[in-house]
Image (cartoon, rainbow, N blue to C red; front, side, top):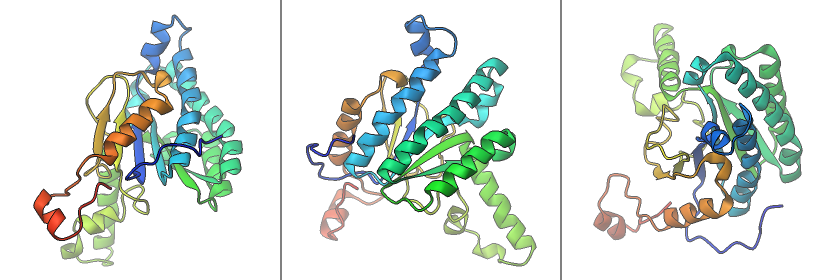
Amino acid sequence: MPDTHLPPLSTTPKHIAIIMDGNNRYGKSQNLATGQGHVKGKDALDPIVEHCLARGVQVLTVFAFSSENWARPKAEVDLLMDLLAQTIREQMPRMHKYRIRLKFIGEREHLSDKLAALMADAERETAHFNAMTLVIAISYGGQWDIANAAKILAKNAIDGKIDVDQIDADALGKHIQLSDYPPVDMLIRTGGDYRISNFLLWQVAYAELFFTPTLWPEFGCDELDEMMQAFANRERRFGKTSEQIANDGQYTRS
């Protein structure tokens, strides 16, 4: 059950994205059987979802399987696909209980028909929920996302639907995944690495970045809350100076 007695934040991020890294290393550190680190990682998601809901976060996007992850050993890929299907099934009662919408982004043509159908059914079943949106990125890559949007614009230009001079950042952004959601405010990466790894490259253009050595299965609500408190205290200028923000009355940390 989400905690409704949390200390208030001066500013709540609308959209949090998480690179859930460190499952394999956690499994090895705990002498777990091969793949069991990913199982523990799956279980770690539930309290984070509920905490974001309690905090008033509008969108939580998690990186479950990247375009590059297809290059991993087949046994690990098969396990991850099974866990993704299991995650979707296990999340559905929580989505209904808390009225959370479930959405998926990524290249679905690479997925099995069974998994793709499960994802589509989950999206359809929760489409009317509006308490929060949980986005799961599966077979997703930021470079693919941008290239795919460019391809759509190119085809529209060839078909005479738009003029080439109409192609700009705003036009491209309308065809990027999650274009109908707020841009990412906070990007969190667990596991100790300091890189974005081709995740939501367009959407994190002005996100505040948080990196932690904590492995994903050990990442909890307390650490997330510390990051959210830090986010609330950061000055976000979006290219302007502090003086400009203060003088025009648009100073914000959101």
